[in-house]
Amino acid sequence: MNRDRCPVVLVHGWKSHPGIWNRFIPLLARESFSPWLFGYDTLDDPSLTDIAAGLRSFIGEMRDRAGYDGPLDFVCHCMGTVVARYLMEVMDGEIRREKVRLLIGLGPPNNGSSIAELFHDADHGPDTIDRLTGVFIPEGYDPLCDRIVREFRPGSGPMRRLRAAGLRSDLAYRLILTENRQAVPGFFPTFTGKTWQFCGEQGWELTCHGDGIVPHSDSVLPGAGLDILPLRPEGLGDCPSQYCHFNLPRNDEIMNRVLSYLYDPGSPPCSFCPDGGLSPLL
Image 1 (cartoon, rainbow, N blue to C red):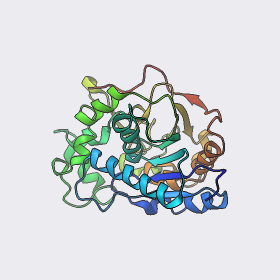
Image 2: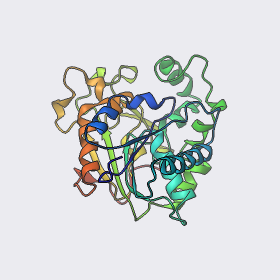
Image 3: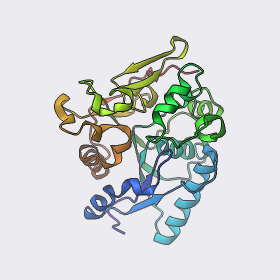
Image 4: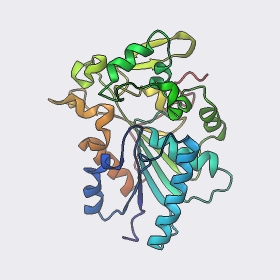
């Protein structure tokens, strides 16, 4: 392990697996970063607490194996960001045992998941589940039988505990999001290039400010560094789906931005999330 580089803990998202990082790991190795690959895809109906506890155990084992007691960097996709945050802010928030320098979240549902809420909506839920079957969820999927989806609804107990804990002042937060500014249907054809956004009492809307699954309002954290890609509106190119939610850990522009933060966590982001946030909280 290169002692001049922090190990990079990689945490995948919901209904995913560690293989999602297969394009990124060679880039880390080329730059002498040591990837610590955490997976929870084999757990049977775990809670957010279960997964975060598993992450804590994994980190301890990796530290012992590497003989390393220094700071870590995290790169997380989707729900993996919230798993890492739950460990650091809720479970470890007052103890501060976990030494973390940087948390980079790719398309994270930090404020709870609009799509999880949509699954439970009497009017929109059945059609949404039907559209996403075979794309994002398996045949016969029932959100009432999925503990994680229930816990990622914006008004759930775990989401309330996360909000109450607050962000940690001893680490840097960076969010990398994507959007479909040109409203290209091929960005995410299931929803004609747009993303469902939950607006609390105002109900639902389809927006271009999201990655097909996670709208920006789900992701923002007060004061966190923020990049919204592609930087150029025409950057979607000939394959706009490369910027949709499922492909964020494989996207070249995103991976290069991640590497720039790993080199130097003080690198300025394109902007910062508004202190007031954007997400309606239940």
